[in-house]
Length: 342
Image (cartoon, rainbow, N blue to C red; front, top):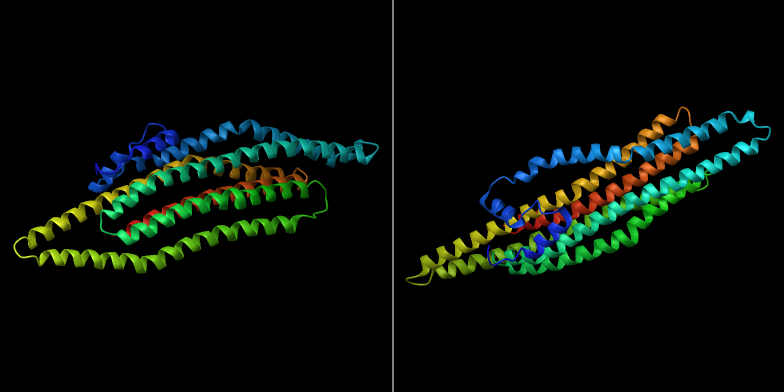
């Protein structure tokens, strides 16, 4: 294990999570078959973040609640005004204030999604060399080359996929929802639904592509590498005098390298889950809050306000799904690569 340098990985972990995790220690625990004790605290961390985020967002929810009730009062009691257009203008003013609050809130959610995606990419970038080096030590040379290229391609593809396509589509969806509910006539509903459908199917297609690659690649290169390793081991066994000793030493070295590789894979899975746990908890809180507000305000507020809040909840849900899909892509890559090269 001393031949593999974890310094870059540890540096990135310290930048993302602080100094609470030692990657080398986690790899050693995984190689020895010990339980990774960090997992026991995951549920508590998620709950603490959930409660904390509720209190952090409390002021904004109160502002939204007050604005929604004020808009309902202006519309339901418009007979107080001699001219109905006064209530409509007042509603538009309140809606524009609400528009600004919701856009600010969504930008915060968007930054959460961008940051966690960037952190996952940074971790995978420094993980790949160490992980592939451990794989080459197990005699899976062809698989190491193929999977190294695939991991680098996946990191670059996710950067483009998220920053150029998925996140802008989600932004467009939110803007369409807010603009559509400004007037009583729904003119952008279908466009918003189409954008939501595109995001959903794109995330599913990316998962299908990664799964398909691993299924096809898992049939070809690991079998060839396994045959090569078996041939080398059997060839050493045939050497007179030292054949048995050489074969045993070779098997022991390969077995030790396999444990190290599996330990790195297990530690990487835990790290990725921890990197995403807090951001996903925050996005989940914001999403649930929007849906709860829409449900509470529906009996008293204008339907455009509740539709707007529901649309915002759906927008944050799409962010949640996008981040979760990226997490699953990386988890599948590490888990399936580890499983198929054992």
